[in-house]
Every structure is written in C-alpha cells, then in structure tokens.
Length: 569
Ligand code: ARG
Image 1 (tube, rainbow, N blue to C red):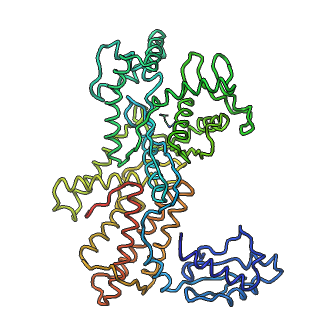
Image 2: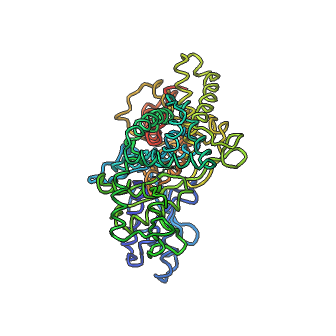
Image 3: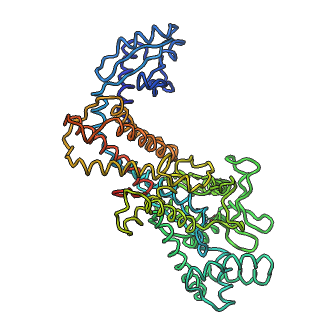
C-alpha cells in the first residue's frame, strides 16, 4: 500500500462527501492518479470531469467545491484547466510516510498455500537456455509471493519418466557401459532418440524397458536411480550458480501410483472413451471448451501414459495431500494448449476443486539475429556454457576495475559471480514475462544503463557511503530540503505499490522497472546532495537515513530475485 496515495484518496473522498456528491461516485471511478505534470504536483484528480455529467454541473465548479472542502495540512490543492485538481504533497507528510517504511515481508493471518512448478528439466539432458527463464522467473515469483505473506513451495517437477528413460536403459544395457559421470550420461539420450526413429526393433526394446521400469523391475530401477542421481547433481550445480533452490525435487515418476489410480477412476466414472485405439477425454464435449480443442489423451494406443496424465496425477497430489490453494506453472508459453487441456480435465473430473490454476507462460530467449538462440550446429545452447561466458566477461571487468584492484583473487571472483548473475537475471526480468528478448551479454553486463550491474553498483555505492559516514541514524528525523531528496522519498513510498502490482500481474518486470527507476533517482540525489561534506547534522543524518532506506529496497529486491549485493565493486 502506498500511504501517500491512499491518504490523498481518502481526504479527497471526504471532501467529495462533504460537497454532497457521494451518490454520483461509482466504484470504477479513479479518484486520484499520478500527476501528468510531476514538476507541478505529485497527484492529480480528474474526478470533477467524471462527475460533471451526472451532476449537471460545470466541472470547474465541482472542482472548486471539492477543493474548498479539503481539510488537511498534508497537501495543497489547486485547480487547472477545465477542472483538474492538482495535489502537491507537503514535505512533512512525505517525510513521515517514508520514516515508517520497513521493507519487511507481509504477515498474513491465514496464508494461502501456493505451489510453484518451475524449472522442469528432464533427467539425462543437461540444462539448456530454455531452462533459464523458467528458473529465473519461477524463483522470483516464488519469493515475491513469500514476501506478500503466502506459504510457498517450489517444485522442480523433473522429467524423469516415460519413454526417454526406457531409451537410455536400452542403450546402457546394449553397450554394457554404465555411465558414471554427466559427460558419459548426456550423449546417450540424443543418440538413442535419433536411433529409435529409424530402428524399429530398438524402439520396441526401449518401450519394453520403459514398461519394466514403470512396473518396478529391480534392475531397471537401479540403473534409473543411478543415472538420475548423476543428472540431478549436475542440475543442482548449474541451478545453484543462479541461486535457484527448490523445496521439492519431485518428478513425473512420483505421480506413477496416482496415474494408475486415476486412469481407473476416469474409466469407472465414464470420463474417458476409446478413440482410435487410445483412451481420451473429449474436452470439446464440455461447455468450457470450444469445438477445436483436441481431446486430452489419457492412455496412448500402445498403453503408454501421456505427459498430460502425469500432470493431472501430480495436481491430484498437490491438491489432496499438499493442500495447495493455488498452483502456478512457470512453463514456456508454447505449452499453453497442454495446460489448457490439463486445467480443463482437472475441472471436468472434479480434481481441481477450489484450487486456482495458472499457467504463467514466458517467451523465448533470442540470439543477436533475432531468432531463437541456438549453437552454430542448431542445437540448444547449454545453460552452463551461457553462465560461464557471463562469468568470464564479468571477471575481465572486475579485474580491470580500479576500485577492486587491490582485492584478493577469490574476492574478485566472488564479485564477478555477483555481477554476472545479476546481469543475466535482471536482463531477463526487466522484460514482461510473455515477450521474447535478445540475449546480448555485452549489453547486460555493462555497469551503465538498465542492467543488473548498474543496480549492484548503486547499492554498493550506498554501502560504502554508510561505511564511510559511520553514523547511527536510528533516531534520525527525515527532513526534506530540495527536489532531489523529495523525489527519492516519494519514490521509496511507491515500493509497496510496485510489489503489489507485480504480484497481481505475476510480472516481476514491474518491480524490476521500479528498482531501475529508484536507482536513477538515488544517483541523482547522490550527485545533488553532497552528503559527506554537509555541515548541517540534522540534514546529513536525514540523507543518510534516506540512503539506508534505499539500500533496504535494493536488498529486498535482491532477496526476491536472488542476486547478491557485494560489499564493494
Ligand atoms: N519437463 C517438461 C518439458 O521439458 C516441462 C515440465 C513443466 N511442468 C509441468 N508440470 N508440465 O517440457
């Protein structure tokens, strides 16, 4: 909540009521908004224009009446043009609001539980650029929801079941070589997958091995457990570089028992029917779908259980046992039909209950040519390679930086890591979730412009300022003395608003954009208000306190998107 805006809104409404206009107000009318002329006032109200019609009065006359009834020292009002009301806040009002900002997580009395399904890598395939956005966005949304006070659980939902596992098992058995490292494991699946398209006998063996695995065959389970462990270790390592962490490491395999149970249930209850050898739920038969929605395939003609059914069974667990009130799927927008089918099936079969299901899709990462990012040979770019190139570039920058020259090599490597990860994450999150963006490391890692390193740089600047000043500001009073400290205080008051808007839209870009604006406003303030040489102790302390609040805002943001602000850089 933005106390400034809320107070203005409330006092204006009081004035509108005092004028006897209350009945003309409807809930969709905007009472106050940010001013179109921020040089003149912070907020404006166009309500007089909105009321003119129903009150049969000239808007200017209405504005006059409202203004005469405003009774406060918190702001001054003036009228412009046909009846715009300009609202200029008093310094004292802004100062007292900013003094109360705490940047601490909300506490909800009965928090709802949200399960965030993100990451979604497949076992035995190294992470590639496609996993970048899901991991970054999912992690940030999870922490944003936590900040809002929800109980939130992140589940990686590993792809560890189905034919790919059988293909790997068949290959291992044939070669007699059990993979011991990722380097040995990772080439197996692509080769087997390619071969299965040409070699029918091999495909049949792989299907047989898949079935045996799913039915609990001991040898297959052992092989599978072994290569899954190798893969999970590798995935954990890559994700830890991005500061991405999961509470649950469940996989599609964990849904196996529920899949079997639900397939029986859906048959018994008559939800499924036979179609071209497969068993399907015909979604177009239900009113929430239009005629061209393809059927939900429950079991394929060869008896294999499909991706959609593992999602239904996983959802069943999340709702009945884990008691989720909401499930968010942070998965590529190209899977929107899949989620439409899963959500419809969940509704039709009654599994969904009151749980809210949201597919939070995202766009693609593009190369400099504007096409989906690929290697020269057309393969997906490995996430580890991408992170490594960012680390290398950041390391060069840090090594050349005068300010950090005297630091030890390990300290420099740590800073380089913070810079690289902030660069990658910020560049992703500044874009609306659903849009594509071009991956341009040179631009992302720059210390200037709309970048992660610019945010770090600004936060580090505050840390060293506070170190240098070394003054306790706990009891300091905030006094505003000019345009710059005023602008900073106003912006700080908009922090909660940015959090709320980002949460409502499931859009971290709103918060990221806000943080960028806060950084530029802080840097203006820093240049215009010479804090260290300031002789007026009250003013100096006030400026330091504002700086400290700004740092808290950055730290809160850093904790949400999981980047680290170093002590120096
Ligand atoms: N493993 C899947 C894939 O690679 C993504 C999983 C997304 N989450 C889900 N619940 N379907 O496409």
